[in-house]
Length: 490
Ligand code: 5AD
Ligand code: SF4
Image 1 (tube, rainbow, N blue to C red):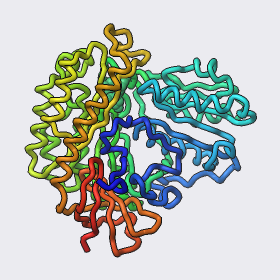
Image 2: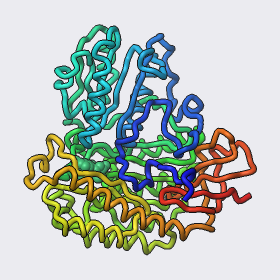
Image 3: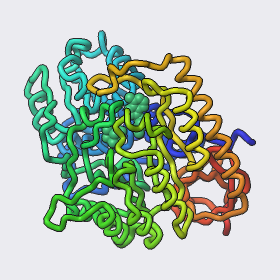
Image 4: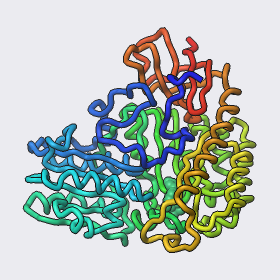
């Protein structure tokens, strides 16, 4: 298989890459692997209901670690700062305010942030260094102990307080924190800086009310809070007016959405309404919890062409015994029932998943059940992780920890099995044509890249120029495990 088009991609790769592995510096998001992404930022202010305040000469640098929720939170934080007259700079050395929006889902992610903070030990002089996001919430004021040069620690549930915290710092405050979790508010901004010219994110639900025994999110992001449907729809309309055609609805458990307004919409009602916004051609949503995944969502995808034919439905383990220990609230059979609904849809819907190996007490037989679930579910891709014990989780002190080498072995076996599934499935797609939204180009401009509705990455050749941002038909000519090569059907 030619290496050039078998590029790693963030959402369809089954290479053991973790979702927090990629991190992003505002203004330079990752594009289609191997290709240059579309020029980003500056062209479009999706939510620019207000004009940024006149620049004050103050600058900021914001680096983001972790998931898409964090990416989008960073867009909102950047909007708040620009609203206060700050301008973004490309390197932390140039900035007056250096912010890290952090992830703590696995230990490695947290270590990475502390390494970054360590860089400032002797260099912080005169700068304000701030830690935002999940690690901020998890470690709280401990961060000041470990890195005394940090002045701001704020978890995502307190972002609504950010303008006030920044004002305190501007007026000479030494150390400010936003660490409350007991909020029923969501983070609304007047101005959101949009860093991707093609795909706009809308958070519809924040926090999480599940209590999966391995997961820090309920602790770091607080309880579930849904946004009112009219606010979501107004944002979607503004984005469409600004020229966006693709919207991704975000939430840790996006399909647990419950409209707090008197309309009382369920997730599927909101999904249909966003897809009906004039100008919107693609609506994605992530991440779905299997427990709240109802057949009505599949019916909606079947009926509404604007709803993308892709569902990310993390299973975590194929063993009902492990799922019970994980407090996932469903059995293997209940999960597979939902996969059957999706597979029975009138149009093919791609399915992706998250899987954890080496959860405490996971036996060889449990692991074998996860492998057999791969064969049954036939995912289009998975994100696979070695279990990482996290503070403030109920699994933290569970007995029968699996040794690190064994976790690595299981991860490799899992990924090998999934790779074979993807190679076989992808080969069958050669010769098919798909509509692709072009989001990257090779410098030589003879090769383009983009995503299908089912989120497959296709790199293709075309006699045309200026395809970025266009929807084009592409015929698949070769298949790799994680991506495809094709040619523009003109
Ligand atoms: N260890 C390993 N993986 C984890 N995830 C969440 N918590 C942990 C942990 N402690 C994974 C889950 C989740 C994805 C975002 O990260 O698979 O779906
Ligand atoms: Fe974590 Fe479970 Fe909530 Fe997902 S549903 S964010 S895995 S606690």
